[in-house]
Length: 263
Image (tube, rainbow, N blue to C red; front, side):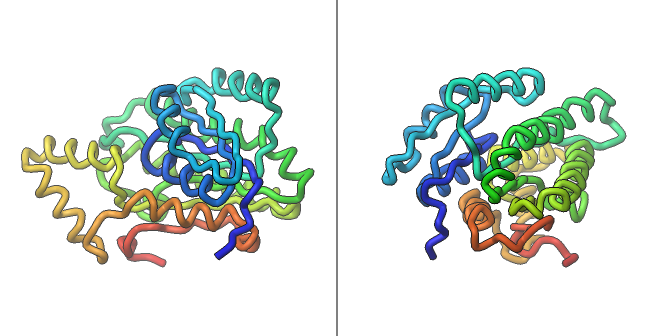
């Protein structure tokens, strides 16, 4: 299927590893010129070297720590002054809060991760919107979590922040749809990333059992009986970035192997 993405430009957050990295790779394979953004320059350089340039794309990266939204704002403005890149696609993707019960969370935990997720996504979205409106085309895709539909045990802060992101995105989708811009949320289920490995190990330590047992328990409640791969999430994101997905707007799409019991 020709998704007609060649020549478009995308800003992909959290793209030094995991799902963000695979999204960047997949978009580049479709001819998109990608700007990566993450905090580790070493990892960013490794990803840059793996991105396809078969369509003579010139990929770039921005080093920014999403824990400081003021720094992000400065970095994106500085990048704009130097490169003046107008983005057609924005992928909001940030590492989630660590495991923990909501009753054990401190107010500062909510503040930190609301800033990393909601505030930074809003900053980047506002940066991209004017060009998208002028072009009559834009794709804003937020990588969130299945916890938007069903809270996950021992992820109290994460569940809360993800809901806020989803509500923000739905509101935004209604405001920008008339300009040819869509805003959609992709909800990965149990996907084989560093975050999932950390969750498994944390729960194993808390329950004082072998991590393999925790892993098996998770797989047994997934109808597909396996974890997802980052590449499977990336494939959906690439489709949502295309013109063929132009009438999909303001929705939450799980990629979870059938885990969620609700529609």
